[in-house]
Image 1 (cartoon, rainbow, N blue to C red):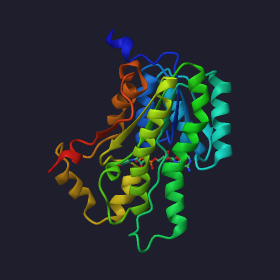
Image 2: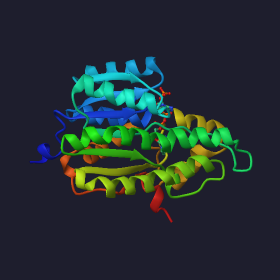
Image 3: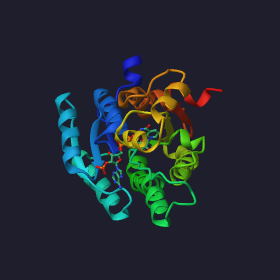
Image 4: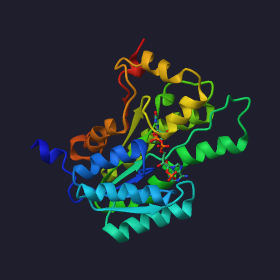
Length: 256
Ligand code: NDP
């Protein structure tokens, strides 16, 4: 019973930004539960390395080079997945960037790049995946938010706006697509040790220690902390769960 609830054999998952960090942590979990994986990113060498790693644990995996801010590339990516695997059951909208500047210094081009990469990409990928999911009787969309879906940060106005938007976009798709059997949920990571935050630790003085003090679990998260939540939200175990935003943060968001 338990194993069936979380079994992803025969399912096909797209993970944007799956070639490293949190995306690869989720891809590893989905692959271990039996899903075939399409890793989507711009850096082909990194994507090929991620595919080799997943293949080594016995998963069917392919790399697709695409910029998720580009509608034509997103549509071609979904067509590629359908051609390679014949179906698309799980979409993880994980690709993301940050440009750290206070609101009075952020250029319009920077604002647009962050919103396009973190929020518009989720719209484009979800819209492109919707009909394939509906046709097969349902699916799962997992959007990646942040603690900045909840809190503000003086140095990340565009990032926080994009991640707040992800939560409202999640709720809207959950309502719209419930009749199609598609569940749409968000994960809100706390502070996780990845390339993204290695840059943040260089750019924001004292960040490393502030996170340790502010996180009840008293550690930075790891990419593999996202394997379990990804499998839950991608599997039958979560069939009556939709429109939620689940923190995976070692308690950061409940620390008073
Ligand atoms: P990484 O920098 O390690 O990974 C980001 C991924 O996004 C890369 O695989 C990158 O691949 C991909 N990406 C970026 N831009 C594009 C694009 N235009 N088209 C396609 N792929 C793109 O960061 P994390 O693993 O830390 O972040 C993953 C997600 O988790 C992001 O949405 C981030 O905002 C979120 N998050 C992270 C937190 C953390 O503490 N690390 C905290 C809260 C949220 P490539 O360069 O090959 O295109």
